[in-house]
Amino acid sequence: MSEARIARLRGELASLGGDAMLVTGGHNRRYLTGFTGTAGVVLVTAGGAVLFTDFRYTELANAQAVGVEVAEHPPTGYYDRVAERLRGAGVQRLLFEDGTVSYAQYALLKERLAPVELVPAGKALEKLRAVKDATELAVIQEAADVADRTFSHILGYLKPGAKESDIALEMEFYMRKLGASGTSFDTIVASGERSAMPHGVASDRIIGPGEFVTLDFGASYKGYCSDLTRTVVVGPATERHKEIYGIVLEAQLHALAHLKPGITGREGDALTRDIITRYGYGDQYGHSTGHGIGLEIHEEPRLSYSAPDTILLPGHVVTVEPGIYVPGFGGVRIEDDVVLTDDGIKILTRSPKELIVLE
Ligand SMILES: [Mn+2]
Image (cartoon, rainbow, N blue to C red; front, top):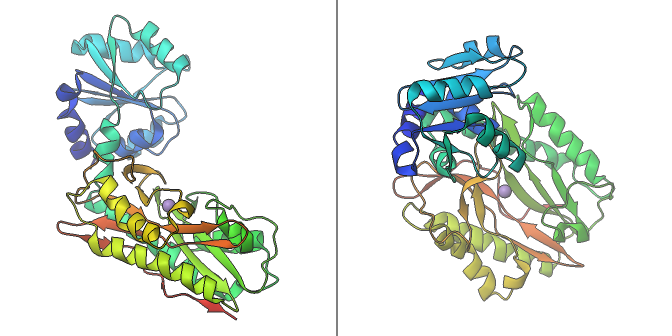
């Protein structure tokens, strides 16, 4: 697993303008080596890959990073050890993660690794990570299953008088019981007028009758994230509830029917946006259609107007989550996780989408 991923990165070094890459980000470190510890860097050169970590993690790293050399660095840091390896391998241009390395860290790398030139790698590794392998797809499916089972479980708790934060707590507890290590982000339970806030994290608000309740949540499972949103009505439902829900559902189903590899992130976004705009709610849909999920809850690729150069590929795993948000009334979002296949998609989340009215 690690060997294949490192080989893919190695194959890109030259085109990125480097002789080697220093991987400092936690998710990328885990992706390349399988190591789940929270400290360490990976140096990938033409001839090998070394995971540098400290005394606290050496044993764990040796157990997890199969096929990767593990080297312990002193408490004073990894710089001297990395510099030695760079000299030994004749590296002159070293790629680094410019999107996540802080200014202070950059200054330190520049000083301690001199005369090696630091070259920004951009999103190279994130783009590799966006295409999931079979092992990853199986885990993400399990994470999606946890979310589905949690939605079904929580329906029995949604009623007038329930507190948003109690609903969130029950969902989080249930996901943990199903094997999740935690949530993939702060659980959103947004009822009534609060449902017009796309990221309305659960509050102490009491759910009332005749209200939308949007649940947006996910499991962190074996390191991978799921992301599921459903909106229900704690009854009775009005015509306005049904109208807005119906438009979002139409847009979501249309996107699921037409998403396929080869189209751009912007075209993927338009699949939902054009329909919602046609119904006159374009201004109430102020976020993009979806995002990649994997080791991180938001990763490449993006289904967004601002991603005209992103081409969707088989193996990409993305969310499809249109919404309409009406201030003072409420909002609806419907979200599934899907994997791009050779000619379309496979839907990973299976919770029902016809409007559920809980009375
Ligand atoms: Mn999402």
